[in-house]
Image 1 (cartoon, helix red, strand yellow):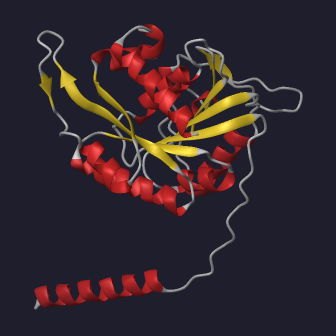
Image 2 (image 1 turned 120 degrees about the vertical axis):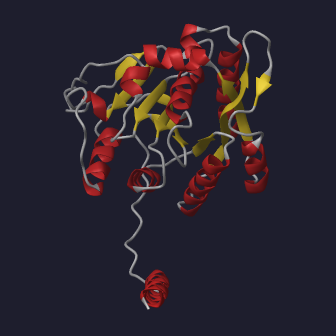
Length: 287
């Protein structure tokens, strides 16, 4: 009897949920997308789930976008309010100053202008905010920072498809998004959801970056597909968007990130650095 009751309640809940989702609702008007003064192109670096190397990709992409001749002006916004990683990866710990217009001045390292919520709170403090507070904070980081002049603003998005993604996509003009994933099936599943979300908010997806694609033994050059094989290539084909880069597992990438020096800066002539410069070129070509 208990089992029957449980089944009936499950069916009732499913019916109510479907009815709720199918009910027409009054949708509030979409906010008007406004450009960020002085910023030419805005690029979102996103992922469906955490732990795929999204922030590492964003940081090295931002530095690589400057070009080997360092002529491009680039900014990097850490939009992950709950888990900001930009301060450690870019070796920045100061608080931003205000100009005469009471606009925050980004901190700078490696020639990249940087801003993160972590610059505005005490170190190691947990940010426990509801959605509206997060969206308000994102607005401040976008509108109350003297970003320009910039050729490119790279936005390191939090994982998932939540409030921050919607707030950023609907309030500023975004030139394109990059989806970072590993070849693992579960990561690809979430990456697909991320691409679908950007499609629904009319944000073009420039392509996919497959991170941690393969492990190459430094001693014998044997390759091992730890997280699967060519998963992002298959996803790229299915979604009809390009595979922009294929970054292998490299201990130096992790070591440089932990030390606050992107591998593009620490090892400028390495094979991995060339992959990030190639990614930057592909992104520029897409724009």
